[in-house]
Amino acid sequence: MKASYIRVSTLEQNIDRQTSDGKNEYIDKISGSVPFAERKQAMKLLKDIESGLINEVQVHSIDRLGRNTLDIMQTIQYLTNKGVNVISKKEGLQTLIEGKENPIAKLMIGILGTLAEFELSRIKERQAEGIAKAKVRGSYNSNGGKPEETKEEFLNKSKNKKCYNLIKQGNSLRNSAKLSEVSLGTAQKISKLIY
Image (cartoon, rainbow, N blue to C red):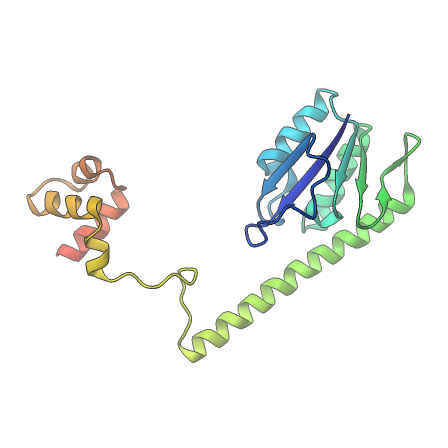
């Protein structure tokens, strides 16, 4: 049986260009730097392969399998050893031809994996440069671009307000957190704002 493996990063959030007929699709919304075997849907796909349900896996491009050459190569070698043909549509590659390993595909996958890894390092470099420039300008926000929350805004949230009042009444942090349904860390933050 054929399957499609689809991965989009949390930045892209768009699977349209990778979808096929909608049958047997394993879709992960996760960074490509997370190893293949640690992704939720990839684990399900590997389980189905182990059960003998899948003999072909289609991907839009090799970098959907990962951004680390070693991980990509190990994943493809594992699938090949299981008799699963990996087909990359964008690059026009398939790992097995008539049940035998395709040496050209193996070479190309190594090169493409290295390029994916290189692109990831370039993305990280550009991100670091952007952060450095924003810090110089004084516009860097370390909490993902969300506006800073004022003390009043934080304490005016209903659960936080309840926790605040419980702490002020002398309840323990743990008990205040439990009764107001906030984390212990939030209760500790509230306590620091009180005292």
